[in-house]
Length: 512
Image (cartoon, rainbow, N blue to C red; front, side, top):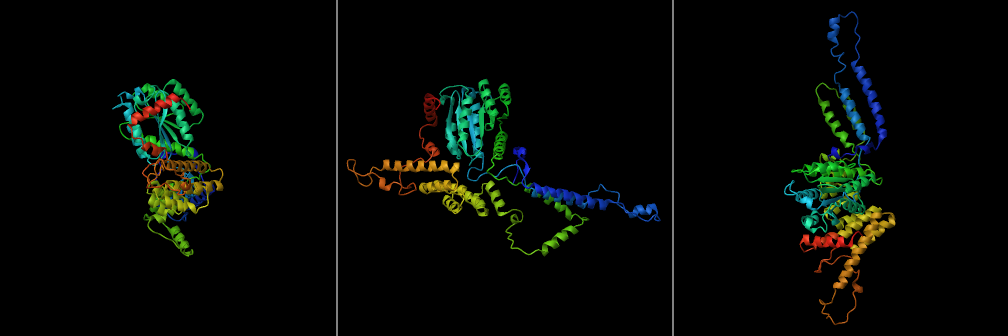
């Protein structure tokens, strides 16, 4: 478990169990009493010669020397701070997302074709986007392109391979108008973020900004909009200074190495944690382990020769006098971490199988199975839990396993348990739409030719079979797109031509 100190939101720092801090007063008092007794002078009879008295009281005047009680007090103080539950971030909802959504906005105008950043500003920006989404695999990312108009290229998706072909097809020639309408792209990005359940960030890759757009961004910042990061592609210092002048602007220069990518990732995570800290529905994440490690290191010095450990013998004796309990220790990790803590460590490392094996928390165990792709097992584990969120997890797992009708039942169950569950309501609507789309497409494609019915024969409709199987049939030869992502995968024309046609139609229709 690690901490990125550059992304900490110190404004949210507090203690979950602040009453433990009272113990610091007790530790301080004990330290003062013991040290005072250890450093006070010993009064010897006056008949002893001064030079002999000095030889018999070695070390009595050295009150500044480090003593065992000093390190003991520090260790106890660190343990008290850890027990107080320091925190600065919340535990993310496993049913929503474990990483921050991102709306990538790319400027695709003629000015981006300048070669001051080789091979040119646009191509370098594309390469950086690919590096970024590769690092963010599993997190929702959307892509918007703008010049004189703004267009959504790819809706939020967790698969970087969906974005890649459309990103490569972007070129100034596919844009209906050349220009710099960053304000339109900002509005579109804001609308896209509003459809997501998790707070996210807007990332602009551009080479300059107009005065009109600066006013729009300034107004957006004053209205407490989602954080905006500018990834500057170019060498024009005047243009960069114009971006830096914006209120609360974060400007990152494109670099030859990956340092800029890492900086963008840190800023995205910092913005996500800051937004998450305002979500009163989520629990605070206990970070007390931060103080446990330095306390453990200092404790090693108690084995230093000459340092007494009578107190440790007392603690050990008290421990032996306590009734024995059934303790399971399968490896050193069990000595320091609970099963759920080990599961969370494995989950953060994207080792979902190990996470599922370690978690005792049923919600996190089910979500680990979901991320592992074992949707049926995840649905079963969600199914025997009684919360509304568990029913949502069951429905999402059933959708992934293409069991749409049971998924609808699960989302309806979630709404019965909590009528205000917005996630369940949206997914229920989506599941009903998918089921209707698949069954309607199946009916329309059922011409009866495989069963020997001719085109002129009289046949009845397919109402008898409608809804008889809640799963999408695997044997049909027709691929039915279930979502925007799968629909985009079916595009077989050249991506640039497809985007050019779609952008032209959108520009002709105007704002919707």
